[in-house]
Image (cartoon, rainbow, N blue to C red; front, side, top):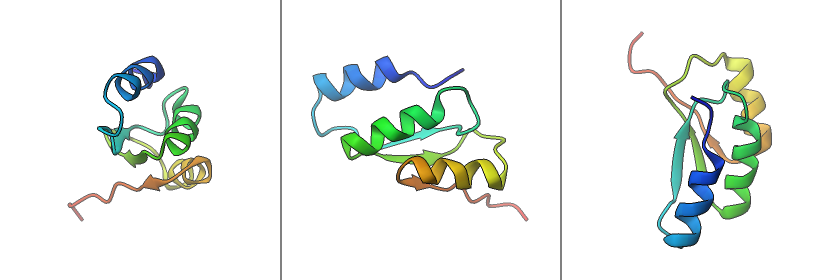
Length: 74
């Protein structure tokens, strides 16, 4: 499922200051645009629910504040 930018906009306008971090899969269509919008809103993007490569996570970080996913398994 691609990121739901409209959902974020609704939550941010309805509950100002509530959303501090949002977890998303950076390899999905529209993720980089949402990461940029989250940066504008002061919301940290966290990589999760993802099959993204190192390169994709690195590229996502160029679009905003991204907390990378670090797996707990070796």
